[in-house]
Amino acid sequence: MIKIRFRVPRESAGIELLADLSRELVSAVQTLSEMLGSSRDEDARLVEAMHASEGRSNELFFRLLATMRSSIINRLPREDLYILGGSLNGAVEALATAADVVVAFSLTHQSPRAAELLEIIQRMSDNCIKVFTSFESLDDLEDVWVDSLRLAKRAEHTRIAWLKEMIDSGSPLTVNKQKLMAERLMAVVTHLRALSMHVGEIVIRES
Image (cartoon, rainbow, N blue to C red; front, top):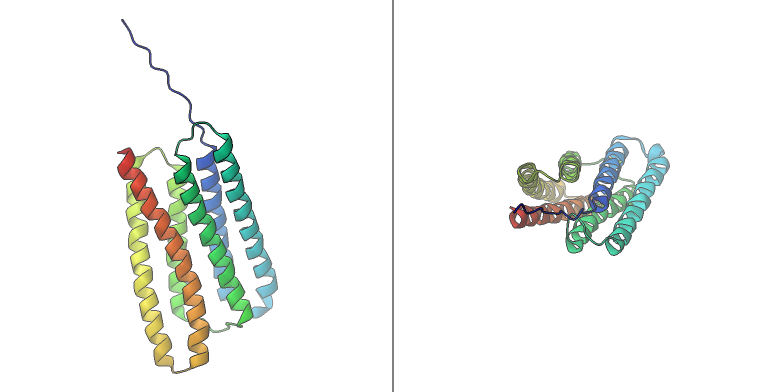
C-alpha cells in the first residue's frame, strides 16, 4: 500500500516582510553614512530621509504583527518572527536616533571609528538580507550567522578603541558628544547581534 503524504503549505509572507525590513535597514545605514560624510547643510534632507526609513520600518513591523495573527501556519513560529522583526526594527530606530544626535550636537568632526562601526553595521545589515532571502538553506544561514557574530565582536573592539581615544583627547565636551554617537551605533550592533543569535537558535533547532 502506497502512503501519500500531504504537506500543509506554510505561508512565507512573514519571511518576505523580514527581508523587506532588512532592506529598509540597509537604506537607513546608507543614509547615516551619507550624513557623516556630508556638510551640515545636508542635515535637514538626510534626517528627513532617515525618519522616513524609520516610519517605513515601523509600518513593516506592524504588518508583520498583523500577518502573524492572521496566518495559521507560518514557515517560522510566531515567536521567532516577532523576535527577528523586533531586532530589525529596533536597529533602524537606533540609526534614526544616531542621526538625531548628529544634528542636535552638530557633530562636524566625526572620529574615524564612527565610520569603522558603520562599515561593520553595513556588513551585518547585508547579512540580514542574505538570511531572509535564502531561508531554506540552513548551511548558508549558519555561515551568515557566524559571520555576523564575528562582526559584532569586532564592533566591540572598535568601541573600546574609540573610548580610549575619547579619553585621551582631554576635551569633556568632545568626549560626551562622541560617547552619545558610539552608544547609538553600538545599540544597532546589539540589535543585530541579538538577531544573529536567534538565527543561530533556529539553525540548531531545525537541523
